[in-house]
Amino acid sequence: MITSVSKAAVKLLAGPSKTNKDPSTQASQKSFKNSDPSTQLKGVESRKIEGAQQDEALLNAAVKYEAEQLLKVGDQWGTDDYSARLSAFADSLSKNDEIYGKKLMGEVFSLDSEAMESWLDPKLINESVEKGDISSDQRAQIAEYFAAAYNEGHPALAPKKVEGGWRKRDAIESPIDEHLFNRKGLFDDEYSSGEHANRVQKVKNFLSFVESSSGPEAARFKQSYSQHLVDHYTLGLPRYAVVKDASIAQGHRSNAAGIAVHLMTNSKNPESTVEFLSQYRPKQRKYIFKQIEKADFWLSSRHLQRNWGYQPKSAPLPDPLSKVMSTVAKSDSPQAKQLAVELSDQTLEKEKFWLKPRVYDHKKGWVANPVYHERVHAMGEMVAKHAQPILDKWTNHDEISVGNNSGYTERQYHLDTGKLGNLFKVTLLNPVLQDKEELKKQVINYSNDLKDQINTAKETGYSKSVNRLAMLCAGMDEAVSQGYKKLQDERAQKAELVGFAVEFALSAVPASSKLSENIKDSLKTLPKTKINETIQGLGKFAVDKTSHQFTQEAKHQLSELVGPDQAHLIAQGSYRDSLRKSFLSGFNQDNRMELVKLNSRSILNELEDMRN
Image (cartoon, rainbow, N blue to C red; front, side, top):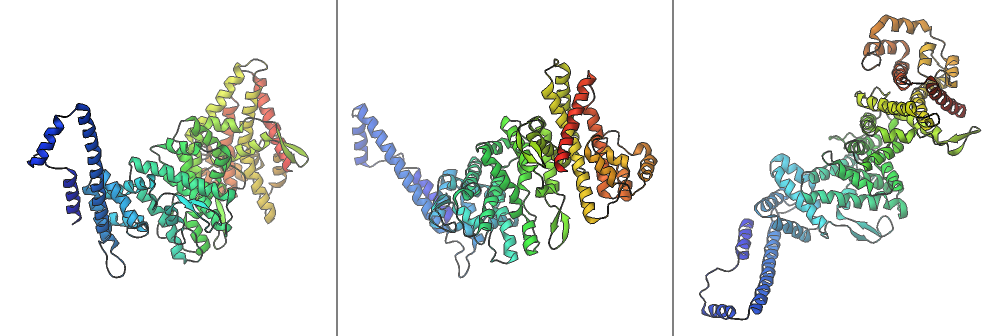
């Protein structure tokens, strides 16, 4: 029935027959031919417009009729057969052209504005593909026409002003928001744990549905809907929203940012993501990144397990912050370099949740951090790609005062050294990051460029490069020193300080820093010959000649002897030493190398004075 209607519409649109034997019509045509040319032209244009209007009216009538018939498919007592209706709709789109299909999509939503909650639910569409009821090409076609309806401002999908509501203010909202954010969607504590789990799956189904189309309308939809989410939720809510439930508002802010990331990030076209983020001001981006970092909490099974003890059947969404960093790593544009610097600034602050390999669960105790590995690898990839602008940021040696700490003036370069230490601790010195050769290469190249500038500069023209290289060395030392200080503090609290070889402990911290004196006083209970014997027994097999890191056998034996935390720090110290050696070799004047060492030690001693 539906197919015959479509064919009938096409026949009608084809126009009247070319042979017309009606006498009155023939006479009219003869009179028209004998008239003035300008009159003929006006008549032709008039008939074209009239014909186009008739064609449009016929097409609209055919579309409306077919939409009405579609909504009757599967109509039955109780719940309608939505699968049958969806299949009929998919078949109709497949048999008609793009203009007809887009109009049919719009008319369906005009007649059934709740279609997305029933027979055009992305979940049903995806399941129908899996069952073979519709093809993947048909799903892509539905997604493309769905996106077109949104892009053209269809009232059933496009954002519009909503008066009042749960936020106690007027807002710009899309019915799609209602699908993703309503009380059956992402945030409502009144529902059971099983229904809570469905909220993550609901977002996954929506994203899979939209991603099925690679057409221009879908690409435009991702851009415009992502901007709607960020503008009116992530940035909109904190500014002027007065909400009934602050936790729901926080969830909406971060969740909207997370969904936008999943819509926008595309490894095949990273520039679209870079351009999207670059349209915002730096202060806005800082807040957006903050919400993206939190989005993992709402859009993963971690929130469900922690609050409900419920294990979802399906895997959670990928971490959105990791997706952003990996996408930025795939772009060479100046905007991508700026984003990489800002992301490193945002993600390297001390005591960040994700910087901790283990986190405390109130039911299970200390457990592995679910986002740690993913973010470490993404960070390593991004820093390796954009090493120069990132290292330029953290080695600037800016002497501006930023406050007072323990009676000492704290300067910007003190804070930057701490962040640089975090950067190396999370990436280059982190055993979790297995493939670090490219990153190591870029860091060494950066140090070599600084040495070239120092070697070729005149007597007074190398101070900036000296300071940068000094901060690079200090940051590497700081990365390992932080680990020792943390271990020392933890053991002092437990009153079970276990020492190990002083010379190995000191190999992982700068020899002249005041922290070394603290370690000397605290690490004396284990005879130092034990570790010496272990390393000497391994001989040449202790350190890998290519990577300059301890071998797995050396790590294992050290771990058995002093525990995994100490073994890790000893391995870090060994790897750091190989990098420092590279940083400080190749000077053509010893006095300039000594100046780098002196400045590096000075920075570290200043940091230690402030901490003590």
